[in-house]
Length: 388
Ligand code: PLP
Image (cartoon, rainbow, N blue to C red; front, side, top):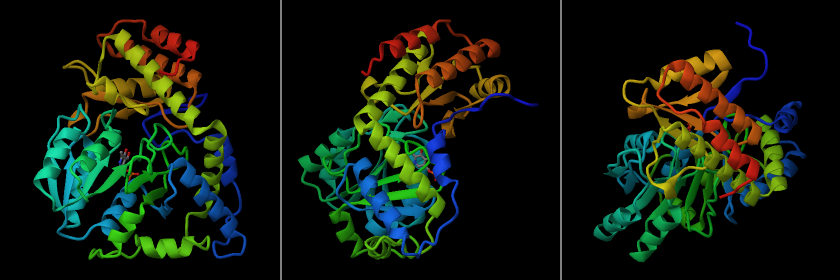
């Protein structure tokens, strides 16, 4: 069936690619070993550091976010190392599974997929075990729309003087909500291109502290493609140890320009406003947020539960077929029970208004129990330009 107008891609990543970024990539492929290449690469490295809020190097791998997870683990840690991981949702579970495949010894703190990391629980584990080599945290659990308080987690680690590394997945929080790497003492920030950075999928990032780099020097893990040191040695000259995703780097260059032009403070405020307006709609509809704690609401994603007996995937299908909008599916144990609205990346007030209208019309068509009026509640917030 022919559908006119543009598709609404409202999954929590990949996100909508701005025209400026698409046009920046519509260029001939260049020689990544040529004399001109370092100018692009070094500019990108410099601007990436601004967006990651760090003086540390930010390494770029041609990979998805999962590759960036693996890169962090096979450099910073050694097989047999003990790591502390929290079950916040689907992505923390996947990262834990990956760590186990790499022969890391996982201490798994069970959770109900509706709350973030409890810093007190983290502190209790760390006090009991000085041998924990790293704490792994998902900043924004994309499967649940729950954000963990990384500054509080760092404070809990510092309070017991623990030497564990802090590895943070910022795949769906980078350039959406603040994660000042240096100020918060994060040792490795892991991210990907396809969410807040507004690019197509295909780039994975590791921002690496001096402490993490020092640990990597003693790692017994086997790594080759993901090796930080080889990457760093080449990056210093503006090159890569193998063929980088040159076309995506053009796009990244432009995406970073856009973020810095808007100003990171404004980028964060915009995401917070859209998240707040989405929650206002949700409250008016009388539907339940997966995230139960107000201080853990996500600025990037809102996951919405449907009452028992109502299939969230059927609702998504109706909305896709009637209104040409993709919403995020429930993942793992939330499959069929929730749908997710991505309000991150290249996004503005009217895009959110359209998105919420599609959801409200879909709820009606699906026969889901809801109260009308969500749109107006959201529009009030958008019209006021409220930021918090
Ligand atoms: N971590 C988080 C928080 C994610 O949202 C995702 C993907 O959505 C991943 C990791 C995995 O990234 P990828 O699918 O790019 O491998």
